[in-house]
Image 1 (cartoon, rainbow over the protein chains, first blue to last red):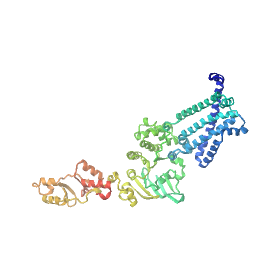
Image 2: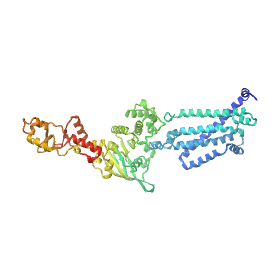
Image 3: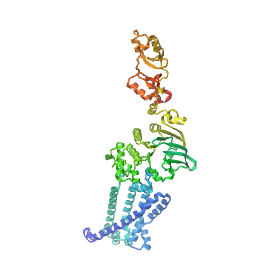
Length: 213
Length: 376
């Protein structure tokens, strides 16, 4: 058995690049998810009946066991980054979608009445009032999504997408606890770090009047 | 300026919110719509800026049917203040005041000048407050900004939906005073909804009393108090309002109607006898015509008993007096300030009509506090 020092000297660079891959894979999926889910959530906030259907579908996707899901896309998209990102993207949708929808819906109707009464059209109402006021809620959806996508992205190593799942799988196959830790620990740190950074971003872009902490 | 013609709003299931509303509002007029909840006052207000569309009838703003105008554009020309205040929490005070000018596309410099000017108008230092957020202001300050926000783009007409309803009584009164001051300065036409009669009496040029979607009475505050159209209006005015009750009363309503009088030639002894009989300590001296000449007190008569024969020799001639129609409060102030025991009330020809005494003052105050049965 190698000592930790020797282990890091041999595997360190590989772990580092796996961490980078992992980060890109996760963030790519969440970014894509945000780009789709936020506008969709805004649209749904205006169409109550459509909302229950779409949110139902998103919740159903969420219930598919992730291991199985990666298996499902294999026949259609093959192996590699694309199918992995597709699955992670689909998983990232629900929290963002739900938070956007609720965030917009729960804007105090008095603000809307004031806005409409002063002569805002729908677009102004959205960009001046609804979106800024829902922003903290949307942001927390994105954070939740990011944290668990980083965790689940380890599974994408199963379909050859790389990332920190690689050392974990290798560790499982060779009974090497160090390898498992070398994959799991960076993934956990990554999740915490990204969540913290997003928190900072959220704080920085939230107007002072909305900060309550 | 603003005309309602047979305006009605009926909701599904034949629930009538407003039945047949007709009103002609003159430019610069302060109209208060008042009534119990569900009387249709807010519905009426919201039909003006088309937040609610009438079922039938028409509303004309400056002669133009509002239905023929784009609702978004229409609303930008009408100020709007709501009870929940609803300053946008994500915007600074200056940005909040700025909303309608921004919607109208004013250049930045003009918008800034206007916001600064408005903040100064209500005595809020722009350098201190412009950059603050609504959550950093008290409720009263917030609604002050709510009013400024409605004034920003200089709309000729402002709609106010119970704007002070959520504020504590002291703040509410301050803001009412301020609004009255602003109105006097800016001459806006204001349509104001409230269920608070004190507020209505204080602010309105004309009060529109509504019940179950109908107008019950349209009248100036004074007129409404003196001649309520029916029992409903009378009960709505209520008997337990403190300030305005006294404020709006005139001396005729609190004075004693037939004071004890004597002629100038009345003898001293007879005068003393009259005082004793009527249990008064002062006699008012009048001519045959009723014209007030002066007054004489029991002390005066006792002291100078030997030196005079008729009351006119002893009476004080320049007795302070007030004319009919003087507000009761003014008379009371005079009595207190000059430490008077009594204050005669005359008509324009100088004829004695009555007498306000310290007792009538107490009675008037009591009637305001406990209702009219107790009073003068």
